[in-house]
Image 1 (cartoon, rainbow, N blue to C red):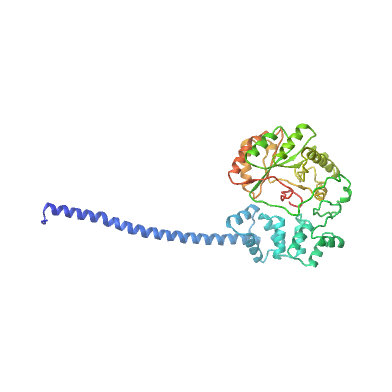
Image 2: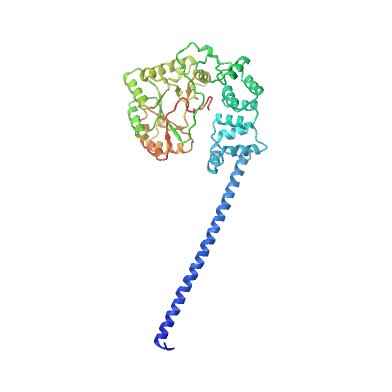
Amino acid sequence: MRFGSVEFFKVLIKTVLAIFFFVPLILAVVFGVLFVQKNAKVTQLQEENSAIQQESDKNAVIADVLVGQRIASAADIREIIDRSGTSYDDLISLALSQKDIDANGLYGILSKSGLSDKDIIDMAAAKQTVGASEFYDIMSKNGITPTELAAAVLQNGVSPEELYEMLSEAGMSDADIIDYINNRGAYTPGNNTSGGNTDTSDPLYDPNQYADLYPDMYVTAPASYNYEEGTIYFTFDDGPSIYTNSILEYMRKYNAKGTWFVVPSRTDSCYASLRAIANDGHTIGVHSATHEYETIYASVEAFLKDFHEAWEIVRDATGQTPEIFRFPGGSKNDFNEETRDAIIKEMTRRGFRFYDWNVESGDVNGASWDQMYNSIPRDCHALKRPVILMHDSAGTPNAVYVLEDVLRVLAGEDYKFDAIHNDTEPVQFIGPFS
């Protein structure tokens, strides 16, 4: 190939083009690899720094809440705990590390974080965070009976002196305390044949006054209660009605069990509906026989009379004995203010437990399909264990229309649907589990 020839210039042009094409390409690849490696390292460092910062922020926020330097709602605290992954043991450790935290503050924090009173009692007794007498004072103000508290601290080892002091303060006689300790929690004040625990030391309440009324109307209270997170409890008040079979069909379609708090009558159609509810495996509880607030809440005797009528109808129709109930209007309403405490004590003495709700559909107030379809799932998302109030009545057709759609939405989110049983930990506006 001669210099200056055509062939020479062809080779020269090809060489120059190759240099201009491949050299930048090689450089781009080299710098690209270096950039990716550097970027990955930067990202890793940023993530590590973010994690450290989040942990620091989390602990700072919790510590601030614990020492009262920041006002936080129950939802705030639950969100902090749930999103941060802080365990309850870690929370207690943080609480105890704060100099200004006391027993009352610890109770408030733990109860707001979603722990049940029983869980708090067990923790306090096991970890010896506070003395038995001091903690009894706190828990009794929050509706915990002395026998429930004593059962927890007994399991975790408390001195006889502390237990005696605690139960004496609760109003138990020496004989009662001895009987309770010997039976490890079998103390049943008054004429309680149910085996349930209740504090009847209220001077305004005398269980002997009602002992002769309806001697058959007792059930066995559970020794302990189940608290299942991720479970939704659909409850239907006021049934049976013309819509009962439709509700049963929708519940069957999604393999969902629910709870009916009924207002039954001695009619063939009511008996048939009650049997259909029971045969599908749902729970039947008592709502009332008349649903007439002024009559029902006039006295303890009036409440027992109304309750017994509804209770007998369910037993006659289904062969099952109702063990749970729901107050007409809920446990706290304008009609039962003067009598509700005595009613709660008497019904608890007989072994019955009442259940309120924490998700209200609004059906009885005329809520539309759209309103319920949007509000029920939203309200369930905010709770660990939703108890939904709906109605099975001729006046609440929208509840039936929306039920299938709500079930479909919630079933797609892996919730479990279950009926309330007598050992399901109650949701209460007022009372031992409030």
